[in-house]
Length: 124
Image (cartoon, rainbow, N blue to C red; front, side, top):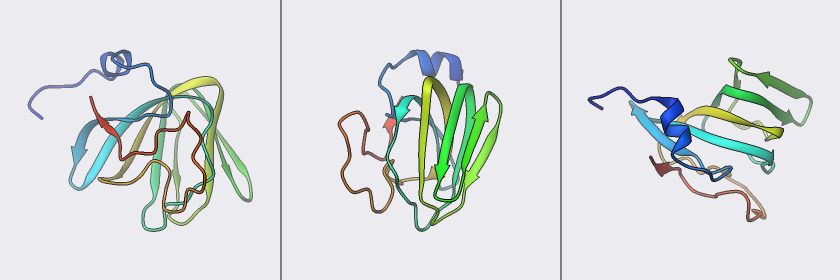
């Protein structure tokens, strides 16, 4: 990466929800941004933590034992192996850090609804 990336410009370049874009890579990890609204699915990443930063809006991350509410500027790391389900009623823009190649729906996704993009992220 030889030039800075504007997250505002990057977020304006796509409209799809729950469809992360890879902004850059750091060592063996993707830095991804996504627009979200509604609910994702319950899923687990058995071998990796998942880092979330809320850029705009509010994001709720349901865990089996509690719910974590993140507002603009908040960060939270879902520990590896923890089943979780992100959601945002009003919509949010988020940044995530995950190992390159990590599926957006985790290791055991079950049924994936049409509104969730089950990929390893897309290039900007």
